[in-house]
Image (spheres, rainbow, N blue to C red):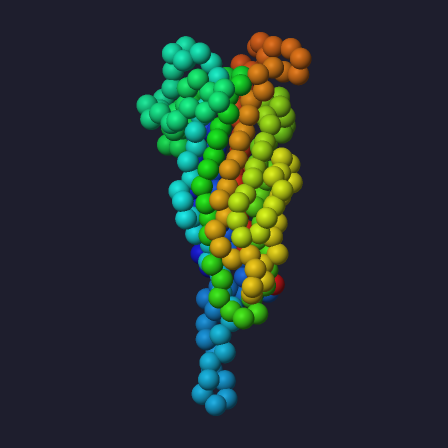
Length: 214
């Protein structure tokens, strides 16, 4: 079994992306599942195998629409500006020290690769989206989520449900490039946030790839 993950820091993000392999029936271990087994005639019977690994390290950018120079950041690493963004910081290593304001976007990019071996290997690859943001707080409930993936199998971007892919011996293995945007609305509905954001924390469970072999 291979586990690969990139973790954020401190308060806002516990895990940005992870990779988990679930192989074989309940009670089977990865080592037992992939060990060659002798058969009559001196041949070997090998079970299929799979690995998940982070191909491109995941990066978190804090994109601000506030006028440049009107706020401070823990990060000093700038990132390229895009349309509507006045300041951008790479906050991959400083996320827990940053402070969000209305209109901020956390932009997450990276890629994970699923490698498979075996003529009969099948399973399901899943990217968790449904529980990405804790919706029990006003800030969490208002935060907009958009997750898209470019990979071997085409998918539709999601905002609240998990992404899944059917993996077969001929389809599904390869690199999945993830883009996720978490946006704090500029307004609380039709009104200004005012004191409603004071002391709020955006709790994120993480983007996790899981492959389940069937």
